[in-house]
Length: 392
Image (cartoon, rainbow, N blue to C red; front, side, top):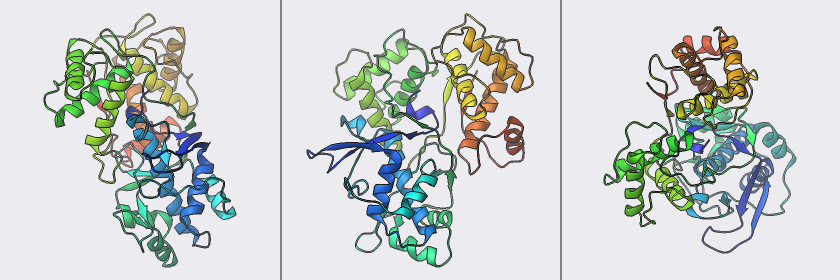
């Protein structure tokens, strides 16, 4: 699933360009924890109070994950994820030694990051030293002073980034992946990648009104989507063929990130997932296919990753025996009759559970939780509502 519709993850590795992006330099690939250990040991002092170290490390993790989530450099055609230049990114020194207390804290924190409440993407948590340079983000020396005054890490972060941030813990760790599906999308294509394509086109069209809007966003690459793609390609001087290959996809990612400011502190925020649910009275069962099945498989897979009760599914839009078994497992867990058929009640139960799990993953809480705990948290108002759009 492409990056703009899923909960962010921690990559196992990150590729660093050892210089400014537009200058030739070596690329090195290191594990993500080792990258953060290097950055933290290069940017801050190990003698600082622990709460200052924690605040700075969380900011460094969040900033790096934002670069991954937005494909900031990959969408510009580069073959790396971040640079070693502190002017644009974070200081990284190849081969440097790191500090024991920094290593310990990174090992504890590397699956945590900060984000704005109600947003999905990791915060682009910019920072500066606060003495020779100043910025709108965190002051490194200022964080040290606040820690000595008794502030804890989150209080320090909220001092600089605002009260509307929260800590995400236990983010999933997985191989680095590209948002591009690996094949061209064209007339007749369907599924979750088309949903993302349509959503990005519609958002970019708000800034470039020559691009026609797609309504509804249904995961089907039909005449509306082809017209929007062709106009997008015309506006941005791409080959006008109505086919979304790698060049068109990443130009769209680049524009989408730009107009939503996802890589900035002032981000518009990634807050929604749009899918086309079955209309009233329509059921999904073994043999069904299409974008609604893809959405179903995605929701169940996310639930399975958190609750460990459902099998991981290939999100292929085909309702086969494995999907049927996963639906039955989900129905049992949600207190429904395990028919393996997705009627409106089953769809909404699975969808609502997904919404609550998504919100829980983005809050300060330990995982896994039982469905009853998630339900109770939602009913108690602890989580005010994950902003997802349900159609149908």
